[in-house]
Image (tube, rainbow, N blue to C red; front, top):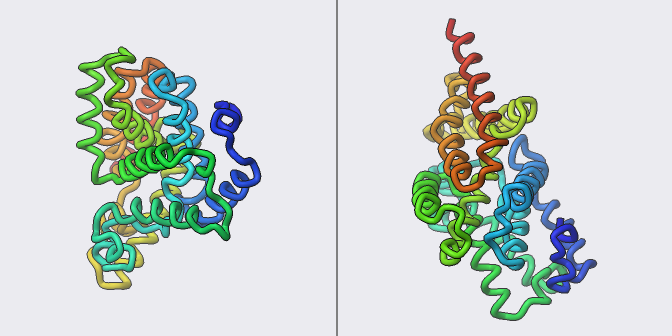
Length: 287
């Protein structure tokens, strides 16, 4: 994708360094049911779709596209399969390090930029940029990855919907709101599993719930309150999926669709179909 977008040539990226960087990033994803390197690749591909087919690229500059693609790759690196609530309640080293604020998201970013500063690893893909450009790319990446914290979801979506209603598809009007656009797009891609064909959506839903239940088991073992959706004995997967699609994914993609016609015509029918599937599964199980 770096080559496809012409970013290697545009920013004089060093290929041996880029290859080492890619290998390092992939190696930092654990073999978890959900938050693994395949999830990162899936989010990256979805960002590419939004940029190209969804035409988000028409609103962004080259360096912003570069930052989006890199942020997609690293947005969950080092994830341990537990959410922020677990880390906060268990008072883990990560929670202590980041003072309970977007714990996992801050950890992903800190891990990445610390490693890139380590000259022995030789993975600083930003070395061809000026000091000012480095600071700006880092700022954009921090904003985007922090925006994947689900605790920010409803505020992020509300603000984006208001901007989309006010600005429409006018490129010039969006000039001062690129950060909001990039953050919302990455977040939407991160929660886009229900916008994929049913076979994929079901697979990702199963993997996500398995990881949730894994956390719930850990919470029970440690005498902690079990987080929502994490108790394998009381969580009903179809009901969980219906709520997730209805109240999280559908409104987000609907707001995106008002702004990006391709999302409305391609993604929304799939989301609606998947919602109907999970609603039917819920009804059958409750009979």
